[in-house]
Length: 236
Image (cartoon, rainbow, N blue to C red; front, side, top):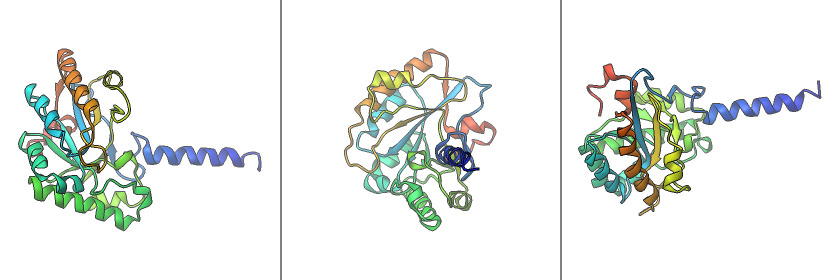
């Protein structure tokens, strides 16, 4: 029996790691990581904004008439309400990325609920949008998230591919974004709660990635339209 103990511990640890961060995990709350694979469409998503450089990304998206989904931190929306409004006014979808971008495993269920609700209220106050998707900071889910999402009518969203645009060069980020039908691509228009973050790599990635994928025949959609197109007419 003692010989099996280390294996059992390792197996339990492996399962917990997948439950917390696995893109296909729904252990702690319902979660989605890709859209309809039958259509030649994908979704471009951005986390951690808004930031002072978000307008540079919006300009590129507008140039190609491409929508995206921005997962906003409430604290950043409070700091830059005009940029948050600009995101919504451009026709992009807005998601909830918590208020202060914490690791959820450090919070109690009650505190997780406060993070999501405060972000939801802040985003709505600044943009008029009521998010229907939640992306956990760092992709980390935890106990209490299921109830918090349910109370606010939110569904968790992970990603099909993530760019690591906070530490790689633009050409490396683009290489990490192999598109497939239904892909949800994750980039960052902010860096947690930092003021005036350097997101030059992200801007350059978007400048290269969007025309490349359009040339490959892909259509860009908001997350709601990608995942549930029949129910997306009232998407915020």
